[in-house]
Image (cartoon, rainbow, N blue to C red; front, side, top):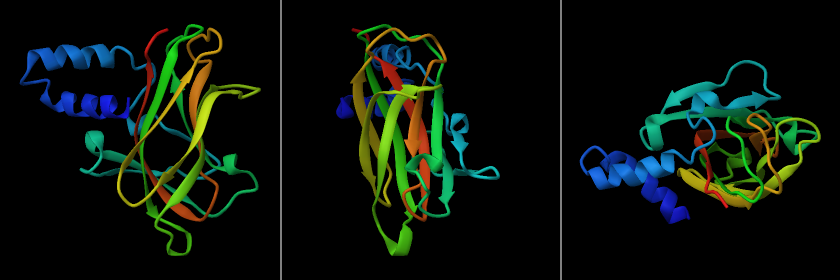
Length: 183
């Protein structure tokens, strides 16, 4: 699927020129159930508003820079979330894909592990449908995690959650996509 999502990104650029590519892109676009732009990221645990910056190296050319002051009491002490605006049916296959990079690591580290990247309930008990860790470095990386809905969820009952409070670090987040690929 990672190749498929990368192809989606390339197809978005080619869609203007090739009508059959535009149709394929439309099929994938219709499967997006969240708001992908970086301005839709919501941050918890940080005072002030993080910077949205221009970055031509990431899809859509914008990134959210998150300065994490240090390891938190809990890895979720600082977290980024993104709401899922559409309902999900039981048994639907979901794909979480987001762009991320490490701008600055603690003590010069060139990689960092984001320990928890999930689609989860947006309210208590915040149960994850699925999650996985991801390692990021100085180059943009599309992280892709797959899972399945255990039951039906109403619009707004789910969100994306990424835990960031693992070290003193600066993380750039790009667009985030949650695709509902159906049963």
